[in-house]
Length: 540
Image (cartoon, rainbow, N blue to C red):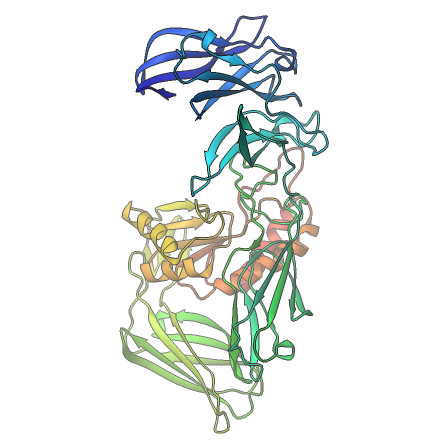
């Protein structure tokens, strides 16, 4: 505490057993790290509400300074007691803070449990201001019910005001339920035309079950909060503005839903962090021709100086031809065409120059795809890219382009201070990679989260090695029944990220073993491993 250019240290110290466990003390400081002078007892737990839970406690002093007075707020009783509450001492700012008689103690808690709101043990607090410095907020811990295990304590925050006597905290309020559904409505631009085919694309919405409506009409459902999905909404759009509604429901406590490092409790704990629900990656509306390029799979073949493409085409493909052109640093180095005879067309593009993608050198080719047909007045074209490289395990060696590469990887959790699960800007994604490279690492295991494709784009560009991983924590691995939700989402992610040269391997599970009396089912692991290898035999 700073007062009249002097520094003071306020703390909870062991008390006078068995009378009480801890009390609040003050000592003067010569500087922010050195105590000087005597320690002075300011308050001990003498009142009944300070002695709940089997021990008398005063702890956790914090201060507020307003209108010429100092307010010292502390926690009283035990943390596991439903009556854990906040008490307060008040002092005139002109008085001597080292003199216990300068402080007046409140005879009742100033902030306590609310039975009607289902909030208990409201202690262990701090204070903060709103970004504009106009509002005061109290941050505190609380339990959801009487007798709750302390592991269920969660962090709450609520605004408080002031009266002539000091802070007025109001009643503790109940937090939002962990299973509350998320719903978002957005209007499309007025220029969105109803005369062309269109699709709603949601790369990732965090939740376990989704429904999407356009102008009040259901257009589809999806399961899984880490894989991408899209819907053809052509029959449902109209000229001008359209309303798209997304509903997401998340239950990270179910045991059947992969949640990754998201906490299954109200608060973060251990290595489980803030929960996320709703939309956490980019959503867009895309207008496409009636016959369009829907998807593409790239298989690099540097040994034969070519790249093999499998392109999905949607719509009437009769008489259409696919043209694929490859460029390196602006120079055309390859071209091929193929007749489209169905929903999937395969074409091999030879390249006259081989530039290998490798760690630290994100050498990429630009790729242009176009549909051609005499009667196609609105032909589709797509710009993309690819890298030429091979990866394989060779005993203890990991070989990229047949060269043994030692992987110096970070464990990237994919949480951000300003966006939690969502990177605030594209620059944040790039910066994470550049910082890692600058520190001498050459890649990352993307831990317990299927990262956004834009991160993988920068990994491709910067030559950053990546192991893709699913957020398998929260999944019950004792029974194959859990695969009904996990496996489709995992395979969707593998298919989505298959073309990225930066992805050098897959890690569908993290830290699976027998624990808490439950034995893992090895059949679960075998099914996922073999299915993944069938879908992508090119990576370990």
